[in-house]
Amino acid sequence: MYLAMNRFTVTTQNAKAFEDLWLNRESNLKSMQGFVAFHMLKGAEVDGRIVYASHTVWESEDAFRGWTKSDAFRASHKGAKDTAKLHEGTPVFEGFTAIQHIA
Image 1 (spheres, rainbow, N blue to C red):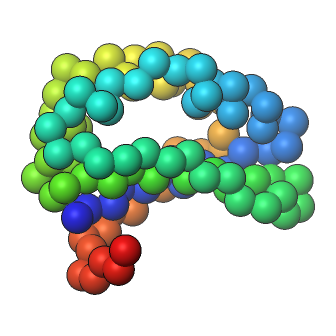
Image 2 (cartoon, rainbow, N blue to C red):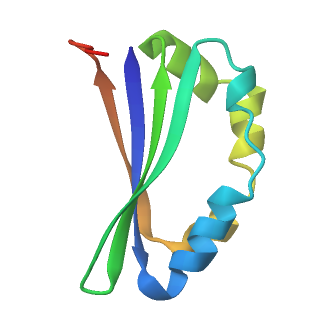
């Protein structure tokens, strides 16, 4: 299993618009081979900012890399520069390979 996360720092003034953007967007993830699950996580408000994390689970790192090279990925990220004003800086990517899974 491979987990891909992007962290976004969002001011409280932009939180509703940021959430609306994610909650109302069209997703192409379910059509991708190796896709398992997606979560958008919201952290606590600290000093007028909220950290959000997009959390995607894949069967393997290769499946995730395939997504990043696909037309579906490009379509999903089209217009991202237009919405960058909703968060501070660039998203911070973190990728993890699972070494243990308990269910």
